[in-house]
Length: 474
Image 1 (cartoon, rainbow, N blue to C red):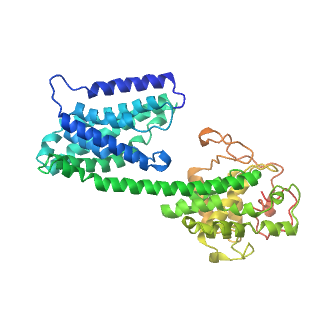
Image 2 (cartoon, one colour; image 1 turned 135 degrees about the horizontal axis):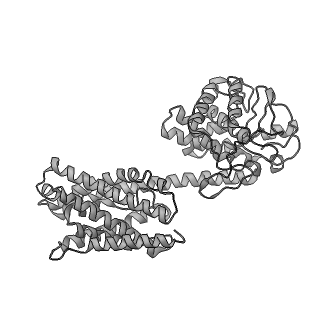
Image 3 (spheres, rainbow, N blue to C red; image 1 turned 90 degrees about the vertical axis):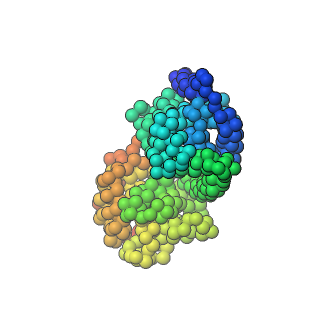
């Protein structure tokens, strides 16, 4: 929304006018102004605290709004009064991106409309009477309907802004929006219902405020998790960028190996935590190239035996570089052993079979697959089918058959669409300009001596030769 199209501005203006109309009390109505003022101030304060806790002053997904107070207003107040509660917090919230005024207006309009609709649904289903009793088995029905309405309005409005401002196709704009918003809104809705019940009880508003304590602690913990995760991502990004700058011929290779590693890991049914670690392993598998002389990585002639031995030290260099990064876990073993071979002819230690850690066997297959299917300066990419066939031929000697089979199944199910190739610049949105699945050309070896790049993975059923008669160590 750096440059907001005219149709998006018209859309935001229409939503804002509708939200403003909803916030106007009906003629003759007497809103409970003390409650409205207290909840509005409380909501605005919680918004400020929540955003100050966010990572780098950028709000992680799911942490953007402190919904319990707003939903408590939905359960306690008439629709127009509930809509008013959202205004101060939304209009005063910190906005880091331009145009700030338009973003504040949009934020206030969508929350005002969502609060008004959900409060109307709650009132229409008899929620206020059940909540005042309180009749818990019955009040959960209106409250659940109000939460659904709140999420639905947010999803509907957000889809509209994606179409008008971001030019997302209509068929894709609303996909997944409702499902993503429902879980956090439901959790916050339960806390809001607890606040509303305590507020209406003999204990009064002071007791209702106690509900905010555990919610505040959970938001703080959530923000801490995102801060730590952001630090991990920044560390990995810096290392990968350093490798890509040094070895320009394999730009994007690390990210693609990370994606292929995730495909294999998920096909094997590994848990999400291990999948994430294996993604790190794939991305960082060649970080040891930082310790290899640049002249060898960019050499256009054949490698001598001595030069090959120097390049074959890169797994050990990489392991030394990351051994102190605790969150990488078993990824460190993958970095060290991803050039080992099942038959024991690999390096650096000549491990065989299950002596090679599972993570290293997995990354080895992902590495070899991308090395064969990526376009390089000296050859074109091989077709995905040809690469898979070569991996299957070498399974049992060089690669773990289980990992090869898992990759083949994942590719059959999801396909392979590399976003970055060595000779193709990245494009906006991560959409590839070409798939990398290019028919093999004259520069692509074939037959039993198929060999990928030395520093990526030698795909051959025989031990590597002491020299290669083509550009080295890509």
